[in-house]
Length: 319
Image (cartoon, rainbow, N blue to C red; front, side):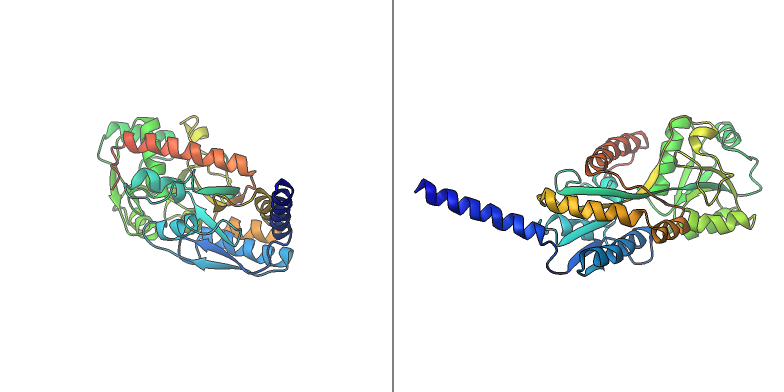
């Protein structure tokens, strides 16, 4: 009897190994929890194109936006962990757990991180007439007018909002928040002088900076970006250790085999090194990263802790 059991177990393990070796034997779905054309979608589509060629099998992108990206993210958390459903998502994966009471997924427990694909800073821009030509002058101005300067964002809990709240906390300044329905609307009101400042992505901010309609004071990332080499990081411009990045990552449902994770990770790294990926990301002011699964898992945990602290400091209550 024990011999029969051993044979059955051996056959089962062999079958699983064969299935993983043959992966993928059918089309693979990459869920993007946001609409087409954004940074997350760009990363997903370039990865899907590369994977389709590398694995000789179709990888297709399915956009499932809604509820602050939660609809798409939750669908992957509930998916069968067989490697045939993957997720490319932005940093809202971690932010949602801080900002909402009812989140039906755990960003750590419910996913198997594959790689941090790319990251992008926000650009701090102000109206040209504002008497602040540097971040240090902006901070000094804000301290001289506590609660009077206004800043706009695409909404509560968005990357630009949290970037500014982190700056407020670390620089010790008090600014008044004006939420908008999108980044473009906030930038438009900076141009018109309705608000003093906003954090915006490079894709939206760069044309206005180059036209002289707004002034760039700093980037939220740890280093200068190729699209705006003259603009210093916040940490270099007066607030040491400040970093606030929008990021894009590739994940699978928790329980996906390590063999499949390793295969997808290896090809993802190759895709992130291609000229096409770098060029597409540069348009959005982003850079390819290509971390290990363990490094990406650590980033997610660190992001949860950091943004929870920022939310408490800003008195942002989960909705």
